[in-house]
Amino acid sequence: LEILVSLHFVSLENNAILGDASYNDIPTDNNNAHIIYPIHPKRNVTPYVELCEDCRLNPSAAGRPFVCYDRMLYLRDRKHLPEAKAREDVIKTNAEHCAMTRFPSPYDEEEYKAFDSMFSMWSTDNNGTRVVGGGDAVFNADSTSKTAKRGVGHYNNISIYIYETIPKDMGIDLEHKMAIQYASPEYKEQNFKADLAIIDLFRTYSGRIYDPAKADLLVVPFPHASHCLSSDGWWNECGHVKNEILQRGVLDNLPYYKGNEKRHLFINAQEIFHAHKLLRNVPLSLTLGPRVAPGDQGGGGGYQIVVPYMNDQRSFQPSAIRSRPKEWWTRPRKYSLAYFFGSQNRNMYGTSARIYRTYFLEEVQKNWNATSGEIGGLPYVIQNTEEVKSKNATARGGQFFSQMYGESVFCPTLPGDSPSQKRFFDVIVMGCIPVVLAFDTSKSSASVAGGFASNTSWHSPGGYPMGDVYPWAKGSNGTYPEEEIDYRLFVVEVHGGVGNVKPAIEALMENPREIRRRQLMLRKYAPYFCYGMGGDSHSYRDAFSKMMESVRFYLSSISSET
Image 1 (tube, rainbow, N blue to C red):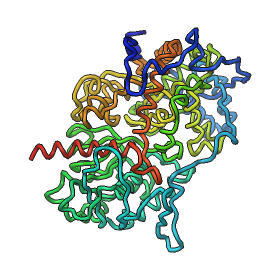
Image 2 (cartoon, helix red, strand yellow):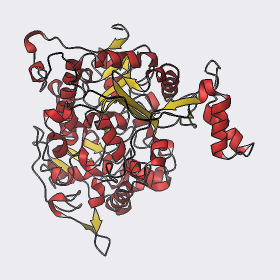
Image 3 (cartoon, rainbow, N blue to C red):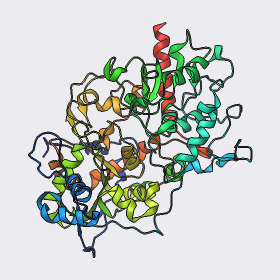
Image 4 (cartoon, one colour):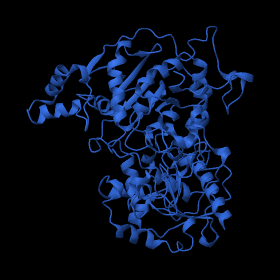
């Protein structure tokens, strides 16, 4: 087990303090037991059987996987069976591969409140003009306001200039339109909204100046990801947006670009390979990861700063996170594990790393159900997100999932279509220890310093190094060394495949002190994975302040070149 699972235990000698987490801070009882969870009576729940949609009908078959959901579709669409009957038939005739025993999670409409988006505070007057709502407004200033708040951190000596020449339909009006979309729980494309908050934080930054000649950094306030979504849904590489639209609407409106290319920051808050080809190789940009080496994915032509995904629920604001005492982070939990997953992307069969979710579900189906739905004395919850949403309308806004993460000790964040995942940051902020699959990789890195950050992928064998995917990772050379984050202090890495997930968690459940240490490390780093909005903007060290430290690090590097 020690070979297969990286538990990254920390020496107990001298009660060494790791950030805020000292072993002296970790409470225990006489038996060192029941400090992670209360004594748990036998659950009075009835398991049920449902169709394992992404499980393979024939796991040994080569080529494109034919999954149980495909068989259900065949019976429904070709044999004209009602969907419920088709599902029942597949479960009955293919029980070995398609029948999944489930243990229900709560769907309490009173406990799990409706969607609570910070973007919902954006309002307009009768003429459609943005209204600034005071200290609690999401957006503290409009595009022409010179109102700003003093930031925190040691980046305040950076002076920035923000262009006001971007046409409104690609700038301020677009931001307004997309904020309304993102505030709706019915809107499905919620992963790429960080650009709106980042642009507003630049507008309200205390180091903003209005003379481009004196600026250290020139910011292009074009929300590239949101623009891609607004045009015609989501297309890969933003391929539905013509080159001339971006050329005329953005690039032709940057009068100070020539000669200052390396000091222009583009807000490409999406995965680098989803960016439009015209903007993928700009000299300096933000990305949700991964950073790519020159020539990889048609990118790598510039310097990329990796930032986290954004969750705009109020419980994800820095003030909310920092107000939680140590006891909140180490409190007893109801569940050993919570894993909510999306179905296979059927447009990417054979190419997506989501196949590891299928492997995991098959492992659970064959080897976990004998435990009666428990690990280490606590129940676990593993469910398809669409199933949850169909039973609980309030879950559409994510509040249900966030609270379930907060009630769980461990949260697997298994590979998706892209190397980075929003879920990874969500579970950290809610105090749940992430569990990842670890793979060896020798893929060319975009400047990570070496070691763990460049030879380990949390996405796929030979995939992008984790130091190129996760912001400010130790050894990534993406910020000052003292500002880097050692993710192994709290993330559970599982080597050797999905069959080792359960043994890894069971081993940790036997070590309450180690779980407490990891939970306290979550407390230390969680604020860096959220963006302060409204009254929280520029008031705490958060994702924006960390990003600005990376900007400062970058500016010092190009200054040394000259």
